[in-house]
Image 1: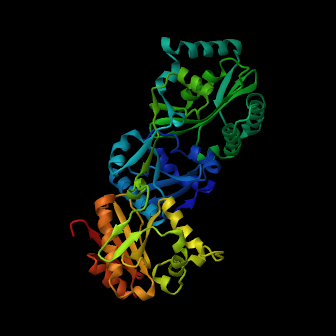
Image 2: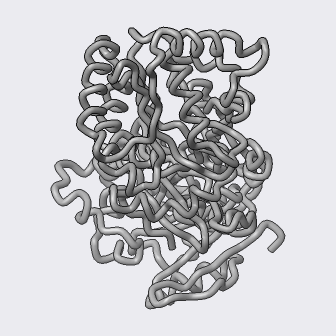
Image 3: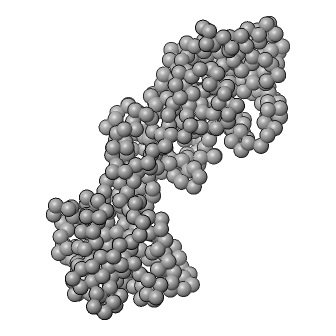
Length: 473
């Protein structure tokens, strides 16, 4: 099972072998990106086989990066995706993928009966051909070429050289001037980014990230740092003082000349929705905008607008009403009997103020599309018998069914009848292909009930016996 742990600064270097060989052309798969945005995105990581799996928290939701194999093995990546699906199902977590490369998108979407796909323009990376940056040749790059020539004419004693730790104080002073002049407007992302630029400076050598400074008249007027990833050079930092005309195209070209040997592409990151930055990046005529697809995998429960009513020979399965909250609380709050339900509400909610909490909690579970709880009632008298629930909805048309009864109604076959009816509803109305169930090993009666409802044994562990049923059974 996957075990995610928070990605600290000390963890970033562990990822370097994966990033150095990555072929996605997505800048997020880089040491520099993971370091510079580790505070804003609260990243976690895990490993499965030879795959690195990254996860970030954005706007209150977890997003799983498309896993990348150290050896570029598609089968290993597919196995990692299966493990992510299992992790999400076991932890009642929605499955959101991010940074899905275009070439991986069709197969990923086709894994699911339903999937939502988006590709936010503001996060697409700008990818350029390295050769075009080296010389700014041809009519289409005349603007950049003219700016470079003007810079050289204005500052004939200009100098570009690799950055060393001895330059740190001067670069910090340069960044302070840059920050004061060019970050006057409030911009949270810009503020976070410049803070991380300061933070990464002491680690450039440790991370193996090339960096360079451009000087004019003995003063640092531009600074850039990047990273070699696969066949591209990722530009993580590119800052210049705008009072020095041509400094930006000059630092961009000189950095490429110094550090892009043998690389086909230069990735200059996204524009984060800044239209001024977008205009600038487009003026350099990108070879491509690198798509970063988000994919939300669908489950059978996601399209359910309201809970159903299901009739059987003796029972009515339907939502529990407000006037039945007391009877429902008697079932849900019975500690001794609910030890076989596998959940003790006191662990999370030790101070329940009112019995209506139990019913409200069940309704919230459906509102969040975690469970589909139905009360079980006698058809003849309307008396409350118990509850049956569909939950643990998976991403390949799976679900799990559970049932619990008030003690006085046990031994009459009501649990079997309810489970069978809800399972058949799930097959016919929800498109479920595999229904699952489990019971504690010591709960022999429950195991027999599940077998009598049409399920088959599906293994065991130290805690549970497992069962399953498919539509053809």
